[in-house]
Image (cartoon, rainbow, N blue to C red; front, top):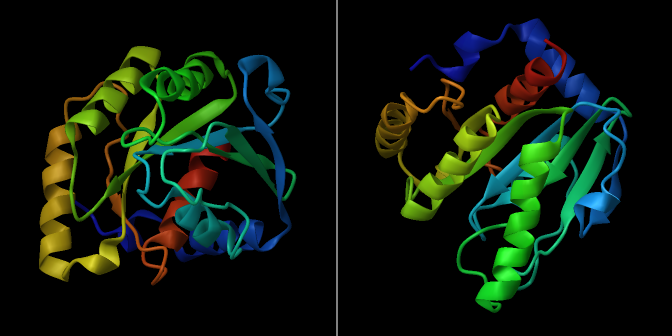
Length: 215
């Protein structure tokens, strides 16, 4: 796999940095499809297991400390949260899946909300499926990938918490993940390893977002 630095030019990385240096604000949280904002801006969505680091990654991408707030109990987020970057695009935080400390009925309710968003959002340019690099793809992640494939939503796998592994182990997990998604019909053919804490991969993820929204 090519290193992220080889994928984007210095100018593209800088353009992405500048966009997210502009104002980024929380727009709204939606608890039903009928409550979504108008589909008038390009959107990218972040999905992943509970406690995978979605809020931390969104904060790192936008350069804000507390824009996206993690629930005190993983798996309790019941809303689709929307953030607007420079009034040009939206970042969408989908409810986490797996290990929800609620009843199965409640868990299905807000996970189905995320699925309905994926199926019916015409301005969704790409979904980012976050995978904890320490654990790799789990069965519940494969279910999410099936949902993306069925909805024909372009999605890219983003490995989180990459600073918790050594370089060799992280490279191995990245390569293994790349191999597992190779034949997935809707999978974007590049796996990106990131660390919200160290900033690794964040400039490249910003550039991926801009490319998906405006290419």
